[in-house]
Image (tube, rainbow, N blue to C red):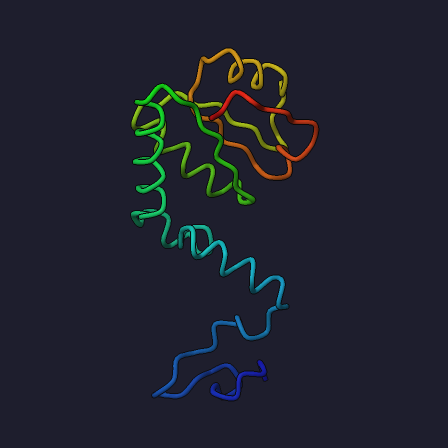
Length: 139
């Protein structure tokens, strides 16, 4: 039994859907799942990869305002999958950006590119950005 009294051995009934398994997850895992879902459904289920995302739409609109005004911006996220979706949109809109996550090979070159003004947007994963990073160039 999944612990969800509404389901019948996770098989559901004609009136109730099949158990999703969400009720058996650890609270921290469940919270992480909900946080990802609030960003984009495709982060939780590959079947939804192509859904439009109003959060990314709003972010891109704000980034356009920032960069059109001659300013630069840092965008942090715990979820590199979400940053990947933002990267795809920035590429499609031809907005130059820098990207830093735990897999970045030449961290110094990426930092230098942002610091010298080559790209107005810097996408940073929280883990990679929390280690030895001092950026004062963004306003």
